[in-house]
Structure formats: C-alpha cells, structure tokens
Image 1 (tube, one colour):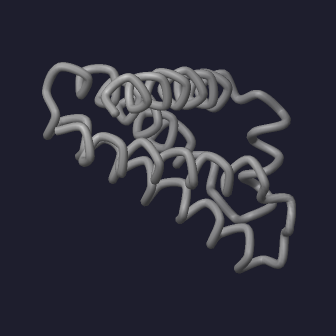
Image 2: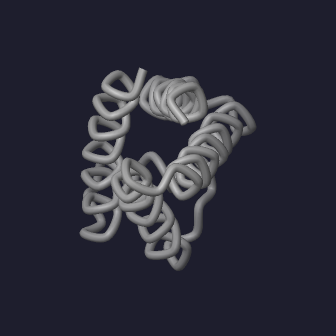
Length: 115
C-alpha cells in the first residue's frame, strides 16, 4: 500500500507544484480560469502558497504520516472548493480541479491505509 501511496503522492505533489508555479507567475490560462469563477487577483499568491504547501506536505508526509494526511486533507478541500467555485458560476470547465480532487482523495485514503 505504501508504494501506491508514494506514487500517487509524488504525482499529486508535482501537479500541485506546477499549478502553484503557474499561479505565482500569473499564467494566463490559470488566471483566466480563476477570474471566471470570481477569484480576486490579490488572492492568487495565497492560493498558490496553499497549493505549494500541500505539495511539500505530501512529500514530507512520506516520512511523517500525520503530515501527509493533513496535506492530503488540505488539497482535497482546496480542489473541492475549486470545483464548487466553478459550479457556482455555471462554468463547467472543471475537469482539472475535479481530477485533482479525486487524486488528492486517493492520496489520503492510501496514506491512511498504509500508516
């Protein structure tokens, strides 16, 4: 179980770090999507920091199980919030957020099962 968790956690961490980087650098695709759902530009650094912290927590969680669980919970909440934000404004281009929410949930379940 731990190997499955490690693989999912590392992939999710890479995706989250990439997303955080694109948010920090104000990539037009990311900022356009966030603008569509009503995220103010001033919130972008905070959201990017949350994604980066979740990614680093997942990686540290490979060695400290409770930290990995907390990071996975945080990322689940972050990406479920993103899905809700898209649905709230009837923007159905939510596949990336939905997939990442499911992957974060899988990382959480696998972390708990391998502890």
